Image 1 (cartoon, rainbow, N blue to C red):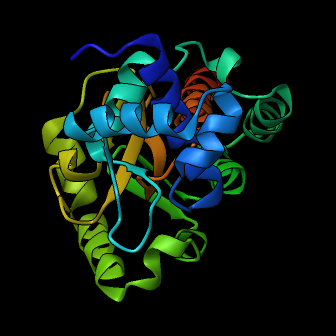
Image 2: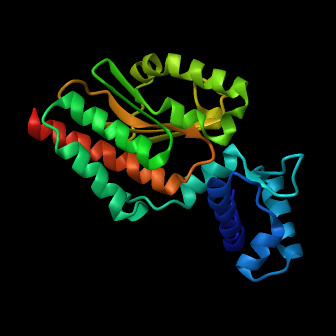
Length: 239
């Protein structure tokens, strides 16, 4: 699937604005931003919609990204280096909280809690058969979870998350499962962003976040990747 430069910019803006506002993005807003007519933007939006990258909620004239739109954005439009993706303040806070710990469990909990505070998502880590979770209340405060059926779907996903990670052992340094891509909880409409890292306890150690598909992917991916790097270094040095 190939997009023009303008289509990519429009898709990126829809993803990023929707992440900030949780409201569908309209053509008038986009037209002002790009200095073109609303009709031009509507035509480009129609093309993106025909490709399955954005959709129009029935209650709104605006558009929202689909899972496929998020996947295109993540694969093609997100910077790959962690330090380019996150402001230094967030990285520094995470690094300080993790590296100052002398015990493994405290370092892991510190990393997970930092991800919760910095992203507003649920933070998780699984190390040597031990599952660490934090931020469930923060996750369910997000507007997507007014619908109780979505809360139940997430709960089911969490029940099956650790056994699935142990069995599947995703091998990339950073693994991103968007919406229906989640092998468990396909209908939960959440994204799982996890980093694999080495630890003295297990060769299948992961840290990451679980949140709505409406994410600031650039920032969250950078934080998760950096959290994995910091844990790997800290556990190697202190244990």
